[in-house]
Image (cartoon, rainbow, N blue to C red; front, side, top):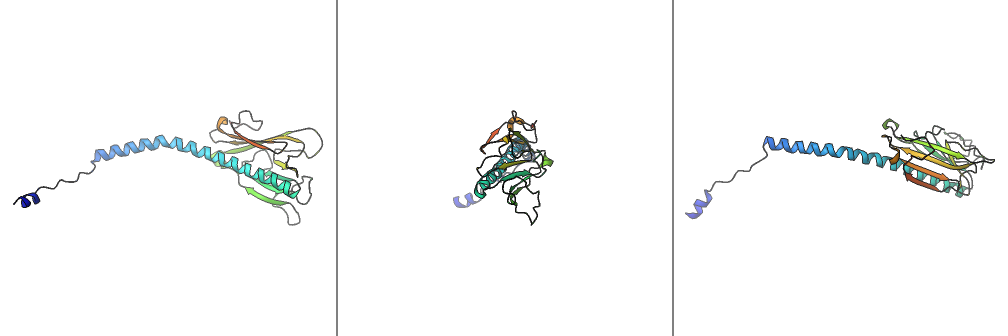
Length: 205
């Protein structure tokens, strides 16, 4: 009889979420997401600027090492031909002229020996990212440096008349203190830093 009595005990019902509890849970989730979005966006912006800086550093190092390997001039050239590098840049070896710095504009004709070694499409200008440059020219004879290209010679140095070349990688929120700057010395050494406030290139503000 005890066994039968035990079998007849009522089974407790499973209790689910009430509508109010569900609404509270959803509201908390919405608040947490709203708090996380600004931090996520800031991280995305920072990562994009870092990736662009690394891409420039990669191409500058390619140009420098290829200039030494080939024994000729190799340049990193902006697609715009100006100090605004936002639309991209390319690496080109001066093959035909062997050292006079007369680089043929893209697309390189089949009759020319200049060689394009790499291309980069630049930054998301619609998202207000930008890249700006400024060359500081030194005195003396030689190839006149411009803001539209960095030229390395067979010794891995910049052309003699450029004492420095600065590249600003600017954020869409226009914060110089969080933007990136690359500086190329006459020796060809490249350094990077965060903060473009003191940069001679157009400001990121």
